[in-house]
Length: 329
View (tube, rainbow, N blue to C red):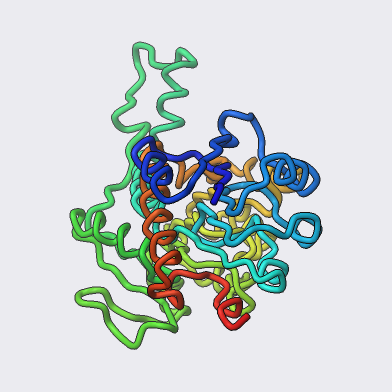
């Protein structure tokens, strides 16, 4: 079998792939310089003629699968395969193996770091110094006084792996943790289960960590945002489709809430309309980098290799294969 690797992969796990496959063709997008859209993807599959594809950003669509029908599986180095047409893969009988949890620690650390950055007014304070405003007669100690994270009430919307990792870090700050997650039956240890309305009205910080589904799309509405404390911060390092961004921009401009930390937008790269929210002085917008660390490459490589080995052995397929409907084909 020949595997075509389009995702960045650790050296150790590449060597392991060489023991699992007859040939490994390693052309990660980080070297070729860009993701492949469907035409480029099909062209390169026809060129390489692989039995399996490992990707991260490339678009695999019905057109691609119709034009190249030799894939036995696709390994997607993402928590959920947003770059693949899942139904088309299932229809073509191609199992998808994902890498859930690959960026859990990266996102968790970044969220807490951004909270500290905003609460301590670090970015404007640094810019104030660079602008030459730290001169005799100024009192930066009082001018840039911020807030501590210690003891704050933090409400999570969604309480999966990333939320647990963030909460674990926040335990060191003795934060009061509550969460909304309809899939969990009750309190999780010292973390308190609450209603969505309670999360928004009671928390000093509301942070989102959940996927886009039919039930979560647009779930964060204007009434929920307006129920937040005037001193509260809103964090979205999940997906933009969960939030009514027009309503969020409105409450930020009105200073109904203290501010927002945003890592995801409706369109990426953003349109001028998408960037409108970034003009609010109480917004810290990052370019979808909360999960971007070098260590993520190591994590995704290890997770995917483990899943490939299980797929090859026919073990735990219900847990390993994302599009489980393909198992009946």
